[in-house]
Image 1 (tube, rainbow, N blue to C red):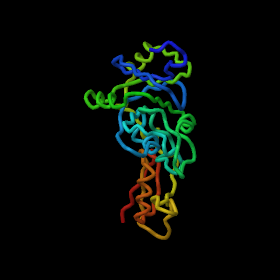
Image 2 (cartoon, one colour):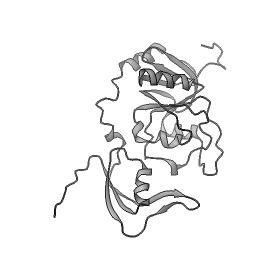
Image 3 (cartoon, helix red, strand yellow):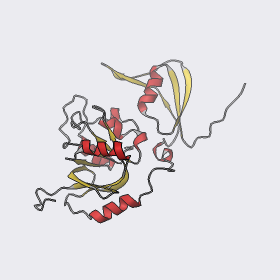
Image 4 (cartoon, rainbow, N blue to C red):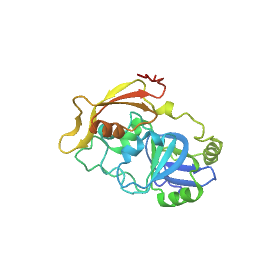
Length: 235
């Protein structure tokens, strides 16, 4: 580990088996314990970070150019930042896209999510494919002061995702109607109008793009929270 303050890592990833990866932190500071997974997509890092199916997981991105299109509220897949954190090969790049409404680093900080750059993400991906998704502790401290033994112990002591009611954490708070259709040039997100097949979607972690596909197919969509108790009526 470098001794000079200028070169000292500001973030680290501690695996339950004692392996530690160091890098440069961005986004929120602090610590989070989660399951480590990977994603090989070349686009859509914001959609992945807000995908409810990644709740309780830190996502390793194998594609190196993360941050290049910035972020925009239009691309959130849910109203929460579901993924617990992100790892990237290079530090996030400056946004270069006409739709960008902000930068990835600021967006992560606002959402309370930790990011770490400068990590050998392909090595991590190989390990995950061979050994399964490990339990990890992700930490970001601008001072670079880490208690590695404590971080590893937290990862080892974490019970994992099995048996958790994650739907309760990512579902909507109350029912609502959805009429936004899929994005299309040049108007963007258009609204569905007129009568349509009535569809009730129970939100156990539904992505907005699923709802947009339903609306684009002409459906009149009503979304219910996971706690809803729908009653079936027979005629």
